[in-house]
Image 1 (tube, helix red, strand yellow):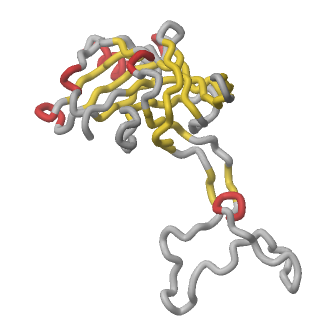
Image 2 (cartoon, one colour; image 1 turned 90 degrees about the vertical axis):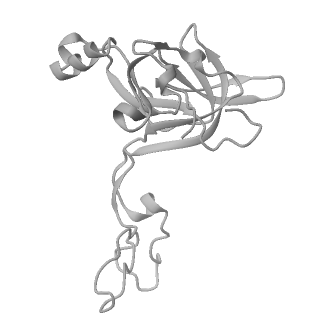
Image 3 (cartoon, helix red, strand yellow; image 1 turned 90 degrees about the horizontal axis):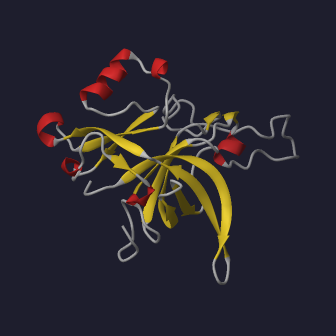
Length: 217
């Protein structure tokens, strides 16, 4: 996994900023502040990671087991708790605050979020199928998928067959986005391009795992 850094935040929406020659589309993320809840190590847990807490929550909304977990590690309660796998987890301490300045302009990052739910969708919307012919003998089933497999052999439908079903509302990671601007005073990150999820949704910004050589972390 290597050394990773990350921060939790809320997607605020998209806008654009301007340089000398062009407009740059950016997504604004309210990043942090986050607090380290627990530090996991190879010796105690079998892997190295840090647990990050983000977001204010009412005391009565925290269950007793959750509150016990926060108290045991000396961290304040958070609405969201997410793990970040990193080999340098031992460098963190419980209760440590992480702010937006963990990233700098020009760095590359991956953004993880939950995509917008689209409900039950057919194969044309969900998978981009062309549908059936709009004429020449087709009955009133123009948006149907067509054949889904053979008959006697193999006498079943293969797993993974693209069919109608739930669309969206799943974990999505967008790789190698550029950090355009970091504003720790206002806890904002401006990231070039779009990130998954609705406005107000929870996202994690972490170090890029497949960053091209010479183009940032």
